[in-house]
Image (cartoon, rainbow, N blue to C red; front, side, top):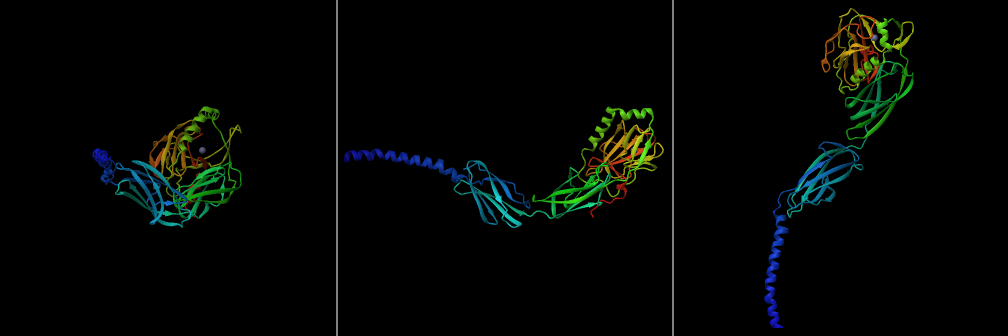
Length: 404
Ligand SMILES: [Zn+2]
């Protein structure tokens, strides 16, 4: 036994040595990198912006990367108070923390995200954000200028709020109405169809503050009949044939509809509009027209000003040229975008002096009067559109649409 024991201890010695060597290797493989990894992990946080406004449950996306020993833990605090600890594994990982702000009072909070790696040093990276919690909907009020809607006229609506709004959207006469500009006041313009039914309608507006809180308000709007005249127009045989030429009518309509499709969201016009030429008014907006003993009836959706061929035609206000070409019905036609869905048009010109894309100023010479297209004599057909609806240009000469 002793001999054997002696023999065993003699044999055990290299075994212990082997274990020791293995231990050192294991230590080197397992522990050394943890000791050597002295680089903090990289951290990126999405869903929070310094100074940003938040409501409800905010999804904070946290992405970490550590090329050494890998990631270990994410810790989220609010004003130094513990909110959550989330374990992250591997060299690269992503997690989302749903920060519930609903029980907090509105105000400023400091959110800190700290990510540690798996090294024995627990190297960490931090990101912090001063953010505003706002769970209170904006107080909003709705006003119109003028007070009533009138067939063929423009009505503007204002949303006033106790805080800055991000967006407001209205619904009126079955149409979706976008609001423009921001701040505590937003505005929109609505063109009332010349043939809209008189009556009382509801304008409903939804508005969102910067944190995304929503509020709704509404008002009753009385829509009144317009005061339209009836006139008679005599067309030559050649001009009359245009009235029945469907292809030409369609081309004419499509080209203009395309040009009116998009409008700058900023107000380009400046102050009241200016009558674009001099001459005699031969037809006003909304006039019911009877062609050649009542064969064709139509409604005149512009303002006709007659003068000698070649008379100067000016831009009624600052704008951008969105159409400048010859069309079968409107002849040489210019359309200007004044922003926020407001356009003006100049038809039957003898000459076009601007090109699409040009910036024009109020009072700038843009063309010369003529009788091109479907026209009975030298005149300017001046028109205006609001969100695609033809409206009476005369109103824009005197109506101040600024906030009441
Ligand atoms: Zn006309």
